[in-house]
Image (cartoon, rainbow, N blue to C red):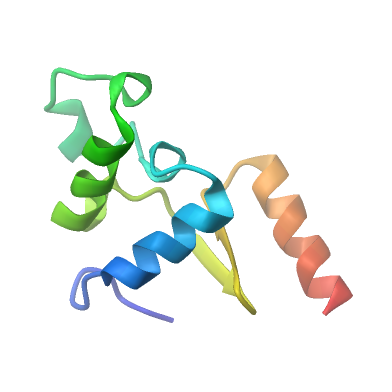
Amino acid sequence: MIDIKSSPLTDLQIEEMRESAGTYKALINGRSTQFRTMDKKPRDLTESEAKELLKKHYAFLKRPVIRIDQDYFVGNSKKTVEEAKKKLSNG
């Protein structure tokens, strides 16, 4: 387990998460207090803006983040949880 509050994510970790999620925007937590103070909605962000937000403050990242082998599962949607369970059961 990594405490991202005390150990910020590295550029490599952010890139690995993006590879699993498909986009930086998919990693953004639009419900976070940090994000709600902005004048944008997650869908209005460019990929480079989303990447910079993720590097800037941990609160912009959806949680939980689960890493199984080389795969990251970000967020707690039903689909994400099912995919993580499937990965765990298949080893």
